[in-house]
Image 1 (cartoon, chains in turn yellow, cyan):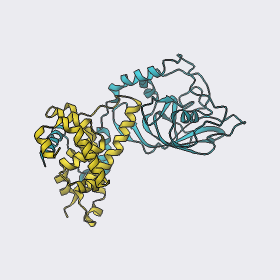
Image 2: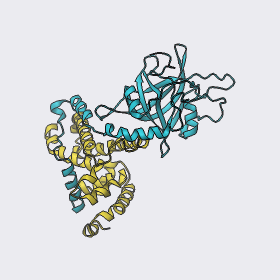
Image 3: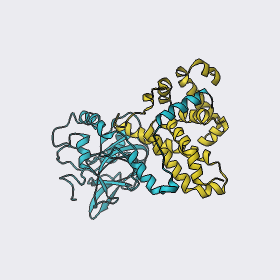
Length: 162
Length: 237
């Protein structure tokens, strides 16, 4: 198994992008990815011993941490509307329709989209990494498809089987 | 990766251009965490004007002074006794026994922040009344506490803030104190302007307008606290 530095070099940017799809916020994504990598480093011996898939492990930790962060920010926004800067996805000019559509997704829907389409995982692995049943993954994905449909070109909709 | 995956990756790549993670095997995990804490920008300073509007809206019925932030309840019935959060009864419980006094309102969230050592959000786990050195307090046990720094806009976990306490004595001898035993609550969020206070367990107290609570949902926060370290009515620093 590779040492941690090799793993970091090969996966850090990927993880950062994955975290951005989860959070739609560059600072939050950097914060989240850094925390996940730090946790991976602290547990690297264990990850090596158990011959785990470290790339999958960091994605799972990112998904779990993003949930607690989401709750925290949501709580703060409830008390003081607009005090927390909104997600920056809409400012990404390269694909504003998709960025806005992603913002409108619930967190679980965004997580499943990130795992299924960004990480290109089969549904069963999405379920494993999210810690939920296959049926729940399908439900979240179906809802995400419906919510994204307006932002996705017809050719891609067909590709997705929508 | 299919087309949607490519579009997601393109978005993410553009959004994270120039962002470089630190390798914790080189810098050490503690250094990485410290640097990261400073990097999280929440835009608090610029948004305080918005917050101040909310604050002023809430205080629109208050006078310039003599804002009464709570009255002890006269009977024990109707108090929250634990479980899923309900706004009114929980608020009554948090105000059970707090005193009425005059103080100069801060006027804005910005002003409150300036008077406070920590502006935090988190979740209330339970409430109970305790006595320390002959004085009676409500101790609010909290979890998942997250500090919003006015100076840097950074957001950082505050695991050291576990109990928030403020003075509140149950004086009604005809009714049992509803906080005589800890009362656990599910789903109660708080927003606090806190300062250190060595006189209470946990070491943190809200200012006179410094504790807002709300059950998860769209309800506006409400003032729930009384005498604390910054109050003229407080029992001392």
